[in-house]
Length: 418
Ligand code: PLP
Image (cartoon, rainbow, N blue to C red; front, side, top):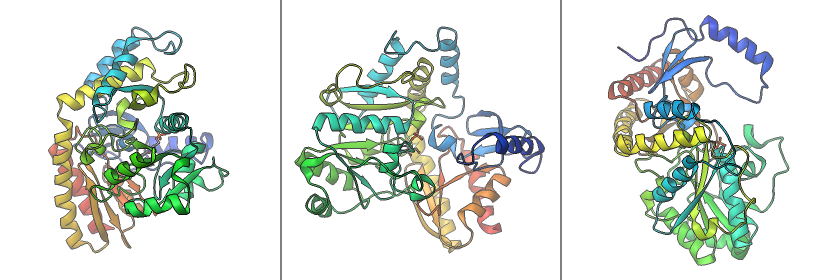
């Protein structure tokens, strides 16, 4: 049976009615990328309240590498719901937090002993990584990159690059943040310490190993390793933001493994929680232990439901060999997309790493027109890029070969039609 099944035009009447209520009740600042409301989801398929079925190639923006309602996740959540929902780990701890920390410590690249803290989101994890880096180095500054995205809280907005719609109007941002071009040569980064900020003032350099919201930009091979060497030379910590690249998306558990280096602090979220809100900072034990009891944490960080979900997600990734699957899916996409590039002059670039793949459009069709065509034909896709001109694929890695082909057929038909 095909995954895509449209019973009504999109949006159907039930979704339409909910859109109207939403417009009255929810602030405009929360965008709506597709005009549907969800009724249920499974694997790589979402069903809306009108009974339409869509292939979900957004995955809640990269949160569902293991798939919607991954069976192990659902079972773990049921079992946990029968036991307890929240105690606050700082008040009355529970084993799943410790087990997840042990697991993340073991998975994090490199041999140095690690420790972990759990938070509620990617932005909160990034904030904590910066706190830890500043406390450990006793330095204030952070270097980040053009086109980076690290979140929407005030500190992470300072680290995020794109002005509209993210930053404009929310100034002022916290200081001592310095931005340089992504992928800039090592010599120029050294030059930054002469011309922009002294190396001995810099606590951390924060980088996405492949930029996510910035347009799935892959830096030259060896670049992050070169940044890492510069960090070492100057006593600066490397914060590896794997919120979008993590958990098998690029064909490795963490994208930095492609570079063979050990970051000082690893930031994860999104797919870690398998659909539940969860973030983590995993780092070298000596760095992580630098701040005293009570200096880190939060009421809900490492909630027991989220910990159980994450443990099941990691098991699903390992047992389902999702790293290998990501490589295959990436190859399947690239083969089709490179053929499209020959036919459709608007496709300026096809790029990515593993299953983190995208294509960039210049001219017609616009990404908006193409993604609209796609959801009207049963495929949910999201865009990326500072100029919104990149179509990215973030499907669950649990997608079947047939579903993948179906989705690629819809994109191809969209490129022909719009
Ligand atoms: N870092 C990266 C690389 C991201 O892609 C995102 C979200 O897209 C974040 C941080 C922020 O994560 P959250 O939306 O969970 O706060």
